[in-house]
Length: 319
Image 1 (spheres, helix red, strand yellow):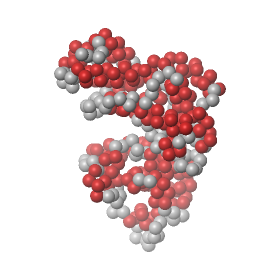
Image 2: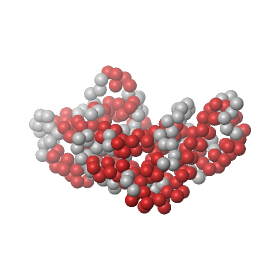
Image 3: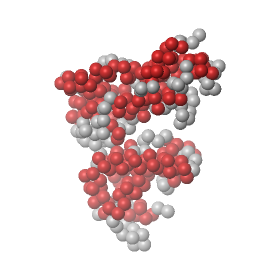
């Protein structure tokens, strides 16, 4: 027996035509709701693929035909996702009021020295969470704090939105470090960790594939788990990381200058990036930082004696 009616589907799909999440992956939406995984993969598996069909047409689609439970699952994902949008009509007017109240997230940001102006585009969250924040104008961590306070009293939220909110609300420094370039036991945000997060949106096999392509020393298991790279796929993955790296370096201008100065003085990039704690992401961060730094990094030419353990021994030691 179907869980949802044709009328409910018509209402949901019409409302979804104006939702910013119409072109968000159904897999991401399901993950963000902490519900059962959407079983179909593919770049076109988005709400926009289905919302132009009425209920009878929906049931005849190849992905749905003979699987009424799958239709119910799709409608359930879209219905719960709309719950993010519905409570927000009054939210803009309430933001000023909310900032005057005690906000545990803002208190944590202040205590840990995390700038409220830090952009959400650099926070390691899913596309679905990013879409929610963008749709409500939450462009910074401070705006996220106010948005989250309002949401938590009005809708059931899950996924990494809830995980980030919980970590910040409770001052969980390890949890915060999964989303922000924060160093446990320290204060403020740090460039090396931010460079590590630049590739965090890639799947683990994709990270391993890029690291392998950049000459990282991987375990046999990690090397076997790496996604096979075609030139087109490598270019696509590198483009995503490059965009994130450039945005990161634009925010951390002062830290970038200090790091380059240290490297030009013979310092080791490995020493700075080891705090990332993942050889694959360290290799990706190193490769893309060097590419972005360009001529700012000066040093001996390749045939001069290498400085053992230093930055240039690493740079010129690669094949």
